[in-house]
Image (cartoon, rainbow, N blue to C red; front, side):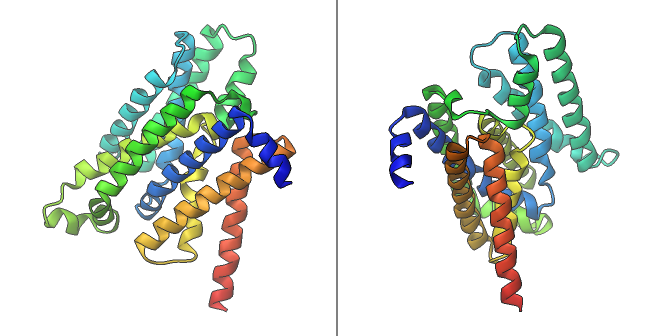
Length: 278
């Protein structure tokens, strides 16, 4: 098995898949703990639907590099979600549902009416559930992922203490002079970047799993924020590697296989936690 994997790794497109998968899993896990603790994990699902709308617009306009449109489009949606969710008349979960479902519906309408693709159903399925083959990743995808991942990791490390304060007690953080709104906005923007990174790997419908499952798994084992974050990153990368290896050997869709690996890891962590309590 090791020899076969080494043979596969000799091909550039397989190495691209591992690099992108590991970086996306790492970045997704960093903010996942914050979103789960703030009870705002559904924003990943909402922004992924918005990104689908951006991809639909880019496809209609025949843009050669869709990320140039999808990234600012998704960041703008993250800002709107944050502002709208603070409205007393429209709560956060309702705002996410409005914007995400609306973007998903209009995106599909645009692709259905104006797309020139010969296989519309295949394009939609690939966008929603991720690429069915690791052959679709290019050197441009890897470069973009490296740059954006470096930005995400740098922002998280640089503002770690502020993110920690905003996550656990916004009232106290505001009382000691922390600009809570600014850091909530930073979190939303970083999540938007992560969503765009993960689109090619797992698709718009499965992205939230990369954000939620590693964080919940780590919370079964540890209690401190730092340990949970580090454990979440390790489990997320492990799930991505396992999912990629299984998808290569079993010829299954990469995104769905990675999410299935994350679900299994969550089950193992829950079992370990149950044994500890016993």
